[in-house]
Image 1 (spheres, rainbow, N blue to C red):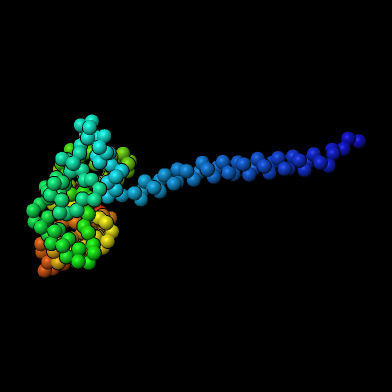
Image 2 (cartoon, rainbow, N blue to C red; image 1 turned 180 degrees about the vertical axis):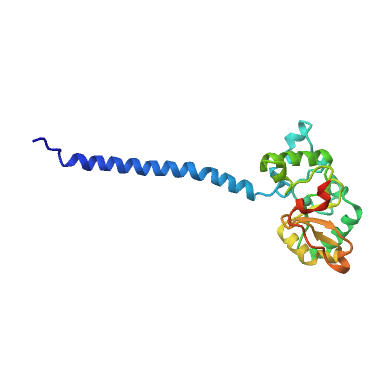
Length: 217
Ligand SMILES: [Zn+2]
């Protein structure tokens, strides 16, 4: 009678187990990778707050004739007192005055107001919108973060994105006293001038820019 040697099935089982473990490992790599990417892209705010990542701040872009500081790009470390930077100098004078008064008082608390973005040219705003559309996948999704050149309060010089987190924390507590108010819940760094806030406090924030009637034009 033919009898299978006892070692053969055990070897086969070992091979099967090895293949199964390998298959699970490969499947895990395939299924987790896109999830990580999706999570990153949905949680990263627009480039206004992470200035170093923007091609607008890349000196090589300027050499190629691309948009630069003259269009509102902001180098690292700029404060509300930097008149030489168009993003700051072209802000609405009343907004700038309020920002500087607040910044002077915040300095007593050891807090410095950095400008991550301020005034922007329409061309710069168009570029940010195109980048946002490709990042978020559609114009509708991008609208939660970036306005058009026609509607953005940055283009009119009426909005500023303040950093760092200690400065936005200071402003969220004291800003109303200077008429400086956050406008969007999803952009706690974005401030505009609301002079009536000095007496009445800041108006209720919109969830995001798509809820702002000014963006419906
Ligand atoms: Zn903003």
